[in-house]
Length: 356
Image 1 (tube, rainbow, N blue to C red):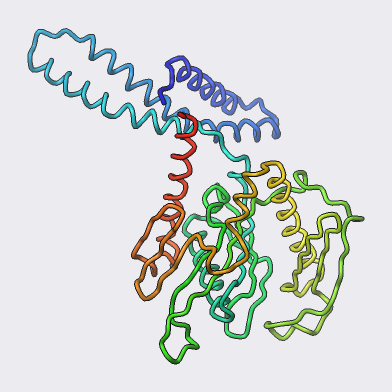
Image 2 (cartoon, one colour):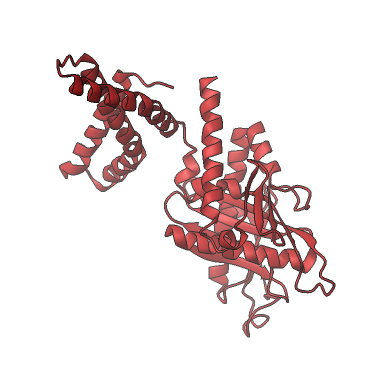
């Protein structure tokens, strides 16, 4: 996809205008925030556009060169060949940078992991996945905070919910939603047999209170005594909170904090994220249905990724990518290669759709 010189100039002018506005010192706080957001969005596009404009200008100059020196003509010919080879890739990078973005890409995200098929082993795998995302978040410079967890007696999670704050969290993690399958010998297996278990991952963009306004009369709030695995404060105070959103039927439970007020605040945070995702689903129609189908029921046959311990490999079935670096992926750093590959595949498909 080739971008016209006029469009390149337009992008450059818009970028220069935003730079001047931000440097002027005349913007009030709201205008400055808005201009900063626009600047951050256009900056990577404008940089690539400037590179292309410079390459095209250099190419035009060299093609007009009529030097009597054979050595100079040879050097010019080499540079022309290099520029002609490099330009298509630069133009492709620009086309990708200009693809329409999901407005939620810049948002923090709510991460939900639930044990699926496999009993205690599935819960242990859910805990492994949570630690993987925790380490990946730390590597990215993000802040992850556990919102709620339902632990079992063997150190796993039946369910764990966390908030991840940082730059471009949802953009990077949104393709993690789906069923993750593990093949390994459980610690409880005395015969050394390989078992298959599953856990579901859901990544939801986190909205603000402005995005999702919740009326108090639409909520049924129950306060009760916390239960399950935990410290000495479990079962001693009525601090657990269950919120039911009556119009949608969504139910959120939070009992990890000692404070009833903190549990209520965290439950509202989760509820708001789920309602926002529901709104996005309804707005996106059939596309949203296809996306939600990736999460499925937690059955091991509905997989997007398999973690095979005996062979030390991880396979993402959506893009047919297998990496024989399972320990590195579960430790966080290796996950980046899978994340980047999924983003690249999505960009390639959207670019092909625009070209078609």
